[in-house]
Length: 102
Image (cartoon, rainbow, N blue to C red; front, side, top):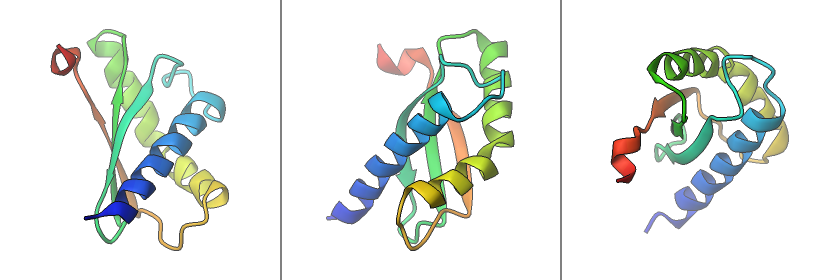
């Protein structure tokens, strides 16, 4: 039903993942952080980015702080890399725990 939103979510997941692994130099956001899923609202005003990390709880907290501090940088790079007319005004990062995968 929402085929366009699904394509946008897949594009954002791919691009945010690329930005995190190649463009961010914040030591709190390490190579162990990976993007699992992205959900955007229908008006594209909000993007929920689900990430996972293999570190302990303290490492996850620091990685989340790093992601939140670089969200404006990530949004700016998304504008350059994608050709969407509307961009998310807010990006929320949520951690998935390992127990969800078992």
